[in-house]
Each structure stands twice: as C-alpha cells, then as structure tokens.
Image (cartoon, rainbow, N blue to C red; front, side, top):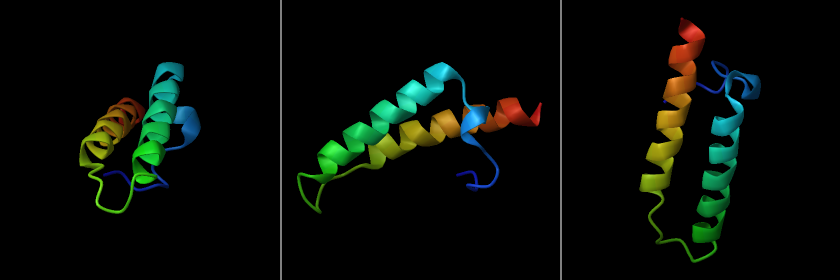
Length: 59
C-alpha cells in the first residue's frame, strides 16, 4: 500500500474521489455493526484505486 505522503487528494481523478468517498462510507456503516466485521474486501478496493493513482503519478 502506498505511503500517505506519496499521494495527495489532488492526485486522484474526480471519479476516484467519488468512489473512495463511497467506500469510506460503506466501511463506516459496516464498522457500526461491531468489531468482528470483515472490511478486507473494501480495503482491497481502496488499495486498487490508490495503486492506479500512484501508477499514473509516476509516469
């Protein structure tokens, strides 16, 4: 996963920002259900979006 100082919010496209916001909301909603909830699928989706933005930035 990229370090937080590698990417800035401005490095993401508008669509990626919207998708990230949606995923964060979904993580929060699942988090309200309790401690035993699995968030790994949503975290993987966030990592894929971050990696795409990082690859685009490195070009």
